[in-house]
Image 1 (cartoon, rainbow, N blue to C red):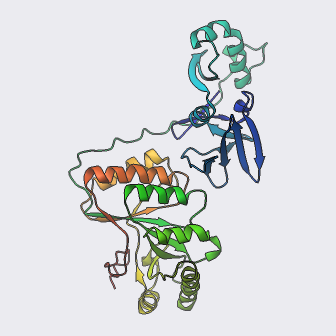
Image 2 (cartoon, rainbow, N blue to C red; image 1 turned 135 degrees about the vertical axis):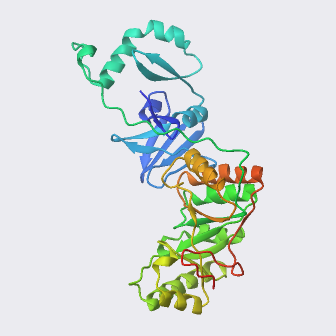
Image 3 (cartoon, rainbow, N blue to C red; image 1 turned 135 degrees about the horizontal axis):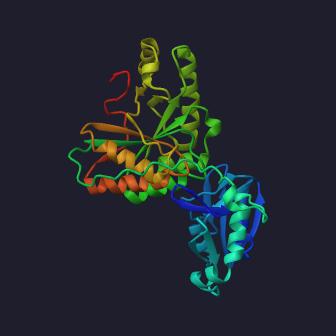
Length: 350
């Protein structure tokens, strides 16, 4: 009995174990392997890699006390086939190897076994009548993913791709690969807490030509001295790793949450203030939905857009879909530079 997440079918990994795929869990990483092929899933960091360190966009999830893995990816990797069958008012998933009988033959020969599996899933004892048992509550259906307008009447004059938050070794390399393949440069707002920085990823961000920037978590109660001290410490670490300093700064809740005095101190110290104008939602939605809703927003404006992205498991695929759409629509993108006039919620263009 499969479950569907983000448009993909998922089953507990034990389903594949019963089909000869070996499984082990170490340091919260699930490793599946068969015939020289391996998939490693981290449910905490949201990444999945194969034995050649190729990354994939369909992670595993912890649910109901088990780890659920994507059916399509696992079947393709381990040489298995899958199909869905309708039986007794339910959809069941069948995973097979090449020697299995056809679906129609299986359904006709195994009808009672299929019914028993469905009843067990519903919690119906063999002596119970299914007609007298209430079905389990179903989760609300997701709203349909909106259509993307391929001939919009408007489009942004320019899009600044910006990534907020700490990079991770599990998700950010795939994001960087996607940007490189698309020929796009971006800006990475790194938290001033450098303990969250993966050093090699920070080095690659700069080596690939992207702009490193710094992200404050401040409000009007934060001392100006404290802000400058955190920015200086972060820049010291950035310079040690990459040989560059960051002069582009954003505040996580918006630069309009800073007082005039705080902004004066920051700009007086040589920093320029930026804010995102549109949140992609790649950290809270599937990549398909984040792409579609963002493309819809693109079609409502001819202004410059500063697009806020993240480092989630869905981000790399979202970026691939968005940059492909931008190429089709002829929408240019840029990284933020010190010489660019700042755009922020405080309308402070210094």
